[in-house]
Image (tube, rainbow, N blue to C red; front, top):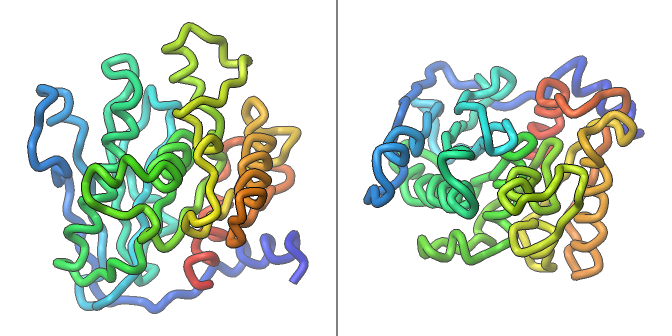
Length: 264
């Protein structure tokens, strides 16, 4: 199916998943067992869990919000409701109250919580997808590609079923560059860049961006470079989808594509 037509079809008709008659939502669940960094960690390091209460072995989407690592709050995208899957919406600590790598540590702790707990609610730990928008996509890629972050929780990053990001940063995040005293227009790839950790044995990765001429500070090109480096390193299960005519804010039109990938 032509990719442009496929996007239009999904946007118009949606993606069908098995429906459940009953969903539950649990809010503000702490994902650190031990809080070592004071009250701000206790305040921010929580997640919400939305899941089908009368279903077993359902997939789970871990969702990281955007906001440049400086703003934003956990919320379950409405397009993910009533789709026969669980959604875990994660809060993490923000700049300037913390600096790198606290954001990544929090993301890894949240993903580890899902691996260690989702089966208690009926979820299948072999079907955990890590997803996010903008800097939330950046965090998704960091914890999936740089295996040390989940490794600290004795979780293998390669157990992630798939990674699907919307307008993600793949170079060193611009807020981390700010911590270095750099301008947003100065590109940087260091150990805080997902592309630095591109590897052939990573989980399947789908990169979705807005139009290359409308995206935020070269975000399309960053994603295209990550895909190229994944392939050079032998990674086969990856895809780059550009949504023509849209800028950075692609959550509404991008999530139907995310749902399609969950069916594959």
